[in-house]
Length: 237
Image (tube, rainbow, N blue to C red; front, side, top):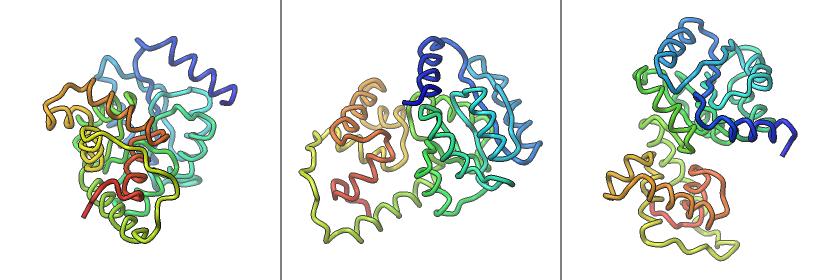
């Protein structure tokens, strides 16, 4: 981990009870203002800065070390996906939510490849944004339901294309319960929704997700779903 990354981790450990630090990035001042007002009303969230393009976002992120970055995709100078890629390289622990008007599948896939952990369309209710910030800060992936459907469709396509490819390594065995959790993660459900669906606690869901990632030697929920589809652990149609 880089020196800056180490400082970032130390800062997080020391400030667990501190508000979630958020950087807002959008080239429209009105949208930035709306997001700021929505987040400022939350006691556990603090807006630490604003940027109007991806280049400025990368520079501010280096200086302000935000916990969560709300970022548009289409912006001048440097778009949000390019900015996300650069920010994750220098600040691996930063959580990035793409908040955009773009419902293009390519933007969605490139955003997650660049390290984003959330993807929301701008038609989302403004009062849902604080929960999204808390969710990704807590380690969840957060996806607009309409985009989750497109993501699952793409996973199914990947599975069909690679149907003839035998697994390169023995597939780690997941328990029946872990498979249930993984299927619900693939549908874009968060921990609370999974817990309600399976009649178990959120902490139990978190433990299952952690075990799944450890067994598959992956780092995020999204990587787990992609891996599972490629190895035909899931049947998504």
